[in-house]
Image (cartoon, rainbow, N blue to C red; front, side, top):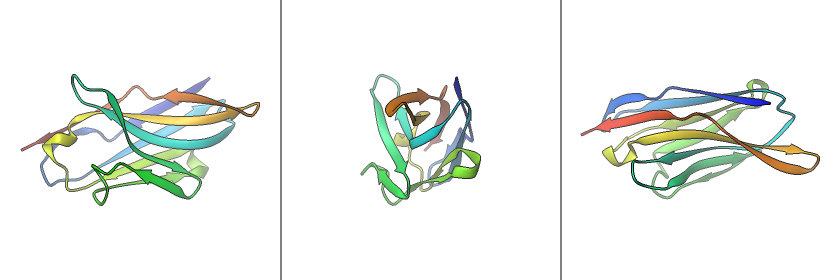
Length: 118
């Protein structure tokens, strides 16, 4: 089994910063990709950023404000969030894709709340 432990969420004022962390443990094997998604109340879960190797993909809504990185030695992915806006308020979910027998398996964290006050 694979476990994802997220941390770093909380309440912050608009314009502030937060750093989310997600550490993977268990029978991880080979991690293909890691990423962050978010879901605001009443809305669908949307991609925030993903990282595959050294390649990153960041949603237009957060481009220039958020940055994703990973520490392969620690099986950890980070999301540095800056210039936060009230519309960034959501539950943020960590996601990893693990290759097993050549097939991708997707795992999700439990989510961490980020609230940005105006």
